Image (cartoon, rainbow, N blue to C red):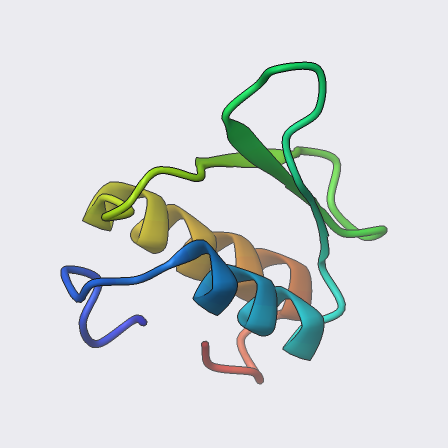
Length: 76
């Protein structure tokens, strides 16, 4: 994802990455359209729209979020 944020990423790809890094990925509720991503070590919650294609800006935000919660030792 870090090397190709412009690829045709799907929400299922986001969910897979979240499981790998133990990030909670909650689907939209109450008519919303954004998934909520959170991690116990992070204060902020990242939201990603479920629409395809997922824009590169959201993939870059996810990569940065993973780096913040996991530290520099783990590359996304």
